[in-house]
Each structure stands twice: as C-alpha cells, then as structure tokens.
Length: 374
Ligand SMILES: [Zn+2]
Image 1 (tube, protein in one colour):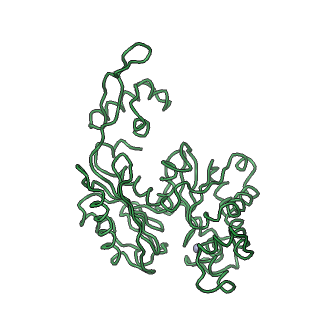
Image 2: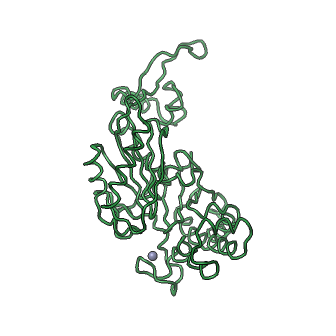
Image 3: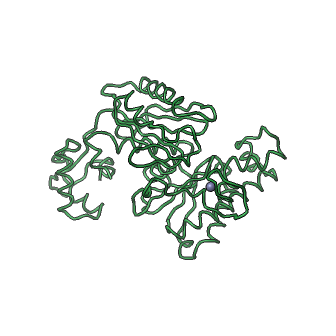
C-alpha cells in the first residue's frame, strides 16, 4: 500500500481496486496510516467525474537511511531519503580476510562521509541495513559459521554500529537482500514467486515465496551453492564434497583457467574474453552456466518461480552465459515449471545488494512507515 501511495494520491476505492482488498480492510489501513502521521486524507482539487473525491497521500517522512553491502574484498554503501531516492553512494576496497573488528571503523567512516555529502535539512540518519555474505541468524543478526568471511562469524556488527551511530541497524543475507532489491526496483517487480541467484565468491540464493522473503528457521534458506552435485568432487569449504559452488563460483572459474591463462587472471578478463569469443573463456563461461542451470533446476522444481534473476560478475558475459543457464535449467526442470520460467540478469547490476540493504533499512526505521510496511 505504501508503494502504491508513493506513485501519487489515490481514493480509497482506487486503493481497494488496485490491491484487490475489501473496502473495510482499506479503510482500516488508511486509518492506521493517518493516525501514525504517515498519510493524510484530503479533498482532491479536481474531483473525477464532476464529483470532488477524498484522496489519500503520503506525508514525506524526514530523515535518511543507509545501506551497507559487505563483500569479500569490497564495501559498498549508499544513503537515501525515506522515499528511496539515493543521494550518495560509494564503494571502497577491503583487504582479503578482513574481520568485523577491522571493518567496522571503515563502515563508520564511509557512512559518515556519505551523510556529509548528502547533507540536507532534516537529513538525520534514522536506520541502517547491512548485507552480509552467509547465513544471517534472525534473533541476533550475526553471520553464521558458513560465511565466506570467517573473521565475521558471530560478530555483532549491528550492535557495534548501533552503539556508534545511535540508530537501529538490521542485518540480512546478501542474496536475500538482492532478491528484495530486484523485487522492489529491478527485474522481479510485480512477481510473487522468484529467486535471486548470486554467483560470486560463493553461490547463494534469495527466495521470494508468495510475495514474501523466505529466510528459513535459522536464516540458512537459499544456500544453493552447497547442493552436492558431484559425489567425488572437490572438498567444499562446508566440509561436503562436490557442492555446486566448488565448480561454478568465481574462485573455481579462475582456478580452472589460471594454469592456461596466467596466475594474474581476473574475472573481468574472463568475461571480456568470453564476449570476444576467446575459446577457453567462452567454453568456461558456458560450462559454468550449464552446471548452474542443473543446480538451479532443483530449486525450480521445489519453488516453481516465475523468474530467476542472476547476479554477480559472470552475468556481465551476457548471452553465452545466460543462454547456457537458461537452456540447462529448462532441460532439467519439470515441463510445467519450464513453460513459465524466465531467466534474466539482475537489473540493478553491482548495486543490487546495497540497494537491498537500503530497502531493509527503509522497512526497519522508526514510525511512521516501519510498522506498516510489508
Ligand atoms: Zn559446500
């Protein structure tokens, strides 16, 4: 409803029609919004069909929110208004193997710099969202032992940032936040059942089921990369063997190509090589796409998503990669799933996770909006 009102004033009857809700339900929701100060009801200046109509519109909430995306070797942060308009954004490099303790001061400096850059009247920070790679446990918001950032496991980043910034800080898994951002602003808008698959240092999925994010009982839902597909395959960091990510993640791709193309090879060079038709790069990108398609098919059969959004650096390889994933996926899922399923690249690119962290902050800030957003 907040999203609908953000597009402009609506009458109660229009809201009921567009949301498919009863007049009573809409009246209760409008009353809640007005009582909390999030919305006002007034007579519209130009009543339609000759009759003046009472319309509901949002009151612009003051304050700014920050989103923070913590990666293996990068930190990206953005500051936005509470209407979701990004006003400052920047990425900085982090050293490989960084710990929570080392990185908290870097996060604080970056967020404070961006707030200064975004300086505006009523521009106080009201909430922060943080995306972390790995399962994020609901109650305490810390990243679990399965994370690629081993120096962050169990570290209370939300507590430390709240202490320093004096505002609520909420954490979530980066792929889940990618799903949130793509559903709100990207390639999965208007879709109720979707998956966002991030292929990076690991392979993780964010799930949207029946219009809601699905995190699982302990925040581990969507750990697609640890699907064991090769019983005698390489030993995975999780302790199992032949997990999907042992032969499809960015480090796996580089490890397979470096003996031929040199130890300094980067994933950006692989992507450029594949686009230019360079045989080893092209072959590798297509093979990884095919293997990912097999893995994502398991998810397809369980969840029956309408859209699978792909994120991470390999997506920049474009057609050869997307075609390989899509063809392999369609071959492996049951026909009724295959008929409807679309495989698309993330519309928000490298910003997907940080925008998801912003969306999390928007839904976690203080009233008037927070308790009414869903
Ligand atoms: Zn594994």
